[in-house]
Image (cartoon, rainbow, N blue to C red):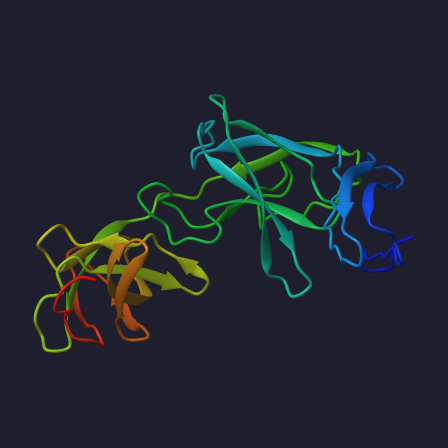
Amino acid sequence: MTDQRGRYAFENLPGGEFRLALTKAKFAPVGSHIQISPGACLVLRSYFRTQSTISGIALDANGRPLPGLDLGLYQVQDDGRLRNLGNYVRAGPDGRFMLENIPTGPVIIGANVNRVPNDFEPFDPVFATSPTNAGGGRVFSLDPRQHVTNAVLRMLPPLRYGQLFVEVKWADGTPATGARAFAKVGAQESTHATAPSGSSRVALSLPLGRAYHIYADWQFWNPPRTLRVDGPTAELVAFQHDGQTITIRLHGKKPATPP
């Protein structure tokens, strides 16, 4: 029998081939074939798959079905942070979705949870609720065979966007052509953008009226060798208007030649 943390151990096994079988009430059995060399130590991770599902509908800010929205399942940890479970689904043409194999612990369904709003997902994090709860996200705690069918994920009104230009320079003030930049807000991170060929000006598409930590770097990538020059830890910027421009200087000098 496993302990409270799900751990178990078989000791003094001879070398050879074995079949490991795990069973638990309300879960489908889990089995695997393993090969152990004499005197070896083998560590396995096994997972019970549930039969529970959560289904519902994604709606736009006007209450119309929203097809093609990517939704993910997140575990609500004891400290309130969300852990990405890697369980994703895309809403169908009618806006409907279904997530399967729902863990038994508290989970929440959300869209664009860990990223700054971008061109592909131009909205703040949004979470599924129930038809009778239009407030914060609904925390689901399901039995291994339970099915929930009334989840609703409704989008917020559109955000106002603008372009923040980041002029990236070397320590001596010369342009760092081909540099990269990205923005962070708390744990959310934007996509990394690269300056056009021959330019050191990076364009970031971001919601207006917010403060961002802006990062910049330069890298040359030619496997197996790479070269990277970082910028300051972060530049705090209040992004107020479209076309706003900031300048960031990298710590290092421009490499003489790529590796």
